[in-house]
Picture 1 (cartoon, rainbow, N blue to C red):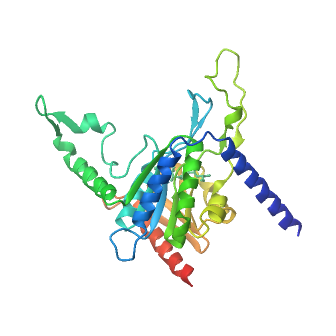
Picture 2 (cartoon, helix red, strand yellow):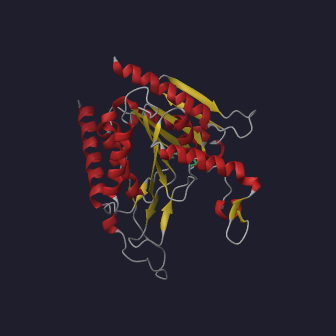
Picture 3 (cartoon, rainbow, N blue to C red):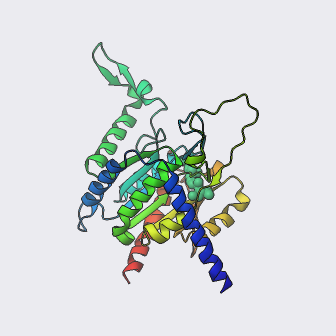
Length: 325
Ligand code: 9Z3
């Protein structure tokens, strides 16, 4: 009985923290535009089985969120993520017949652009004459692939890309996406690969102008970002298939932490990865067991995301079947 009262109390505290996070967040400037894009995308993709458009929709989050230290932001705290995992996974989900909402950090890796050099505009193109630009031979295959596959996915209405920078934008857009995907039931999937800040400065207690140096050490209080995973699962999209990621640098605690996340946030899958080996191996943690997934080293350019998405699609199919009974 006491345990039940305690868990209700902590649930209550979480909801109060979440409310205060959203109430104090700076309003999302382009919210009406994002809602309109989401509406159109979901209408277009909610189709009869057998159509080329997918009846399964996944929201892939990618890149790290920032925590601004000033309202007119000059400085911020960042979370590491190149966006490679999210971009690669988006390509494999599209290949598997899913439609994808790609919620990504501005400036991070984009689907189909992974094999382009760092500065694609300057490195891939050259002047052919005074008025013509041409693709350099060395990059022509990669450029052709990027343009054609990306444009096909966008033109067919299978890929919607929404950018974020701050933790405030990320969580507000994630909520908009989740609420709009609610009606898809078990066909909806959330693949939460973004590296999300754990601490933030509440907007109302944040300095408006650039913090001045010269007055000694900086003393600043960061508040814990409320854990939205549980509210996503319980309230926003209770029927969706939810996958979160657990990142650690100490492999000794990784699986234990992933197990905890699985139970605490009632995720269907937690993908555990260690920073230095994340491109080689991940462990898919579920309530029925742990599965190690590795990149096929015998194939040049093979990604760990290829077998990973294959396994997750299988698990999602089983979940959809189960939800029918
Ligand atoms: C991940 O663990 C991603 O796999 C990476 C991908 C960020 C490592 P890259 O973008 O790297 O390819 O360079 N994402 C989740 C990280 C995270 O913040 N997880 C939280 C945690 O570990 C749970 S939501 O506590």
